[in-house]
Image (cartoon, rainbow, N blue to C red; front, top):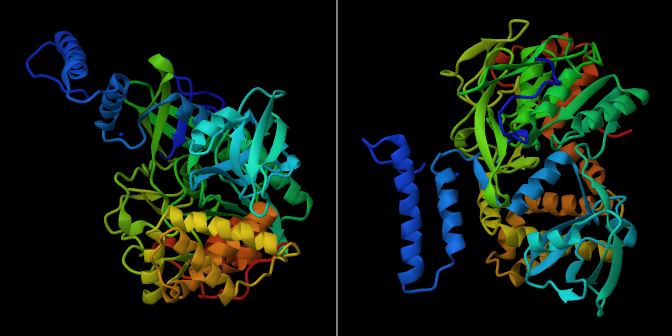
Length: 554
């Protein structure tokens, strides 16, 4: 099938490839009578509970719980009954736009708090800042309301206005704002940068309705700046629209090349192929992958690997080889149901169910935990496939990269301290964000190379203590490398957005450094595979012919 043809599923309103819980049947009874009896039974049980249970019961909630249990009993983490707000959020993520004021918000200490305004939106132009607490909307207090509730109020038709009041650190009064809603575009590609030696870097964060267009625009722009080779970073891409995964693959494959095959139980096999010849023939490409790469990003990685078009570097991917369809049902709900599995051009299923803990990288950053949770995969019993050029590929759960390269690992002492710190979950994240807000306010002329001092860490420890995080300063200092990385990343993100965070951390990213090193030496895709060695011969480690400082943006 050409890339423009959609999967034919009756009553389906979208086909997704994203990473995201039966009815009890009596035996020996006809199916029709069985379903009737069970439906009546559920209604009778709920009515009895409503009339006679010792405590007052919310009947609507009982039915919601029963419906959710039906879907959960499938044992499929990717199937779910979506409430209206969840459905709206999914539409926003996959469509890539919505009507609103452009604020990324989270719940923090009973306040809906601004994480960051989206650049170029009403919230950004009005001067809202990270750390601002939204306390009023349209003259009514929203303190204690959930993030979803406040977000629903802030969204609306473009051209309409919304009044809000904000509390800001260091300002005693509530700051009033009146913003006019606009169409807010959510970028799949937050930035693109040309590194030393003509190596382009393009991170792709989601597969929404504009992903292919955004990647093409970013790559074309970098080519105009002198790019000769490309790094596509899919390490934190959880997926999205299947057809956008097909479209991105099509950019790098010749017309007629197989991209993905979708097989459902009650529908014909669907073949997706490249519709036109590739746009950048001969350009060496590295795709960075990891446990955070799922679904549509695995479609891209699998297609380019199977056709020997790109070298994959990083760690095994998540392993979500299924497709979800969306069915509208009563009450404004939407049933998200797994309806098919997909296979790479070589015939590989990458479905990993349940995920294999031994292949996980526990910490999604440039530093990872040591110990048994991070290790090279055992490929002994994996089914073997061949790429277009005869290279050995492995199926059986996730995409196995051509070069397995670990992020920097922690010592045993660091590992223990970081695990304890991360065990406090949201308290750690909230303290980190609050610390970054204060740090930026106290350093208005901050430069990207800022250094985090002992005094800074002591103040951060005080913020943790305010949130009842039971950790001594000595234990925090034991986790210093990770904490400094996280604090520095948070400050850079708030001060200079995604590109600023990338530029601060690039030199610490071992997987990026290896990709950059290989591309500096490669003049063709074939050169890349030759430089990387035989993937079947075992994982490569950074330092075997590499090293040195990290890549620098031009």
